[in-house]
Image: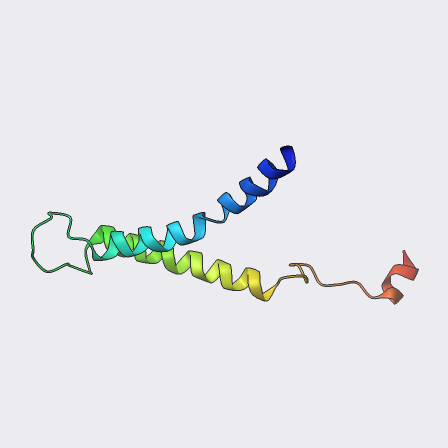
Length: 83
């Protein structure tokens, strides 16, 4: 029972990523006045959301790029022998 909850929780946590995409689309392309007018893409709130999305995508790309290597350079075996 505990193992089922453990794996179910990790799968439920992955729902954050599609929820982020849907919330981004909703926040950028929805008219705040709910009238059938045009959407102003240069509104202050929309620019804030777009900047947050750009920062999020950039950090995601850096994380994918650095996967397995980390932020610190790897030490060589010769450096370890001096310590």
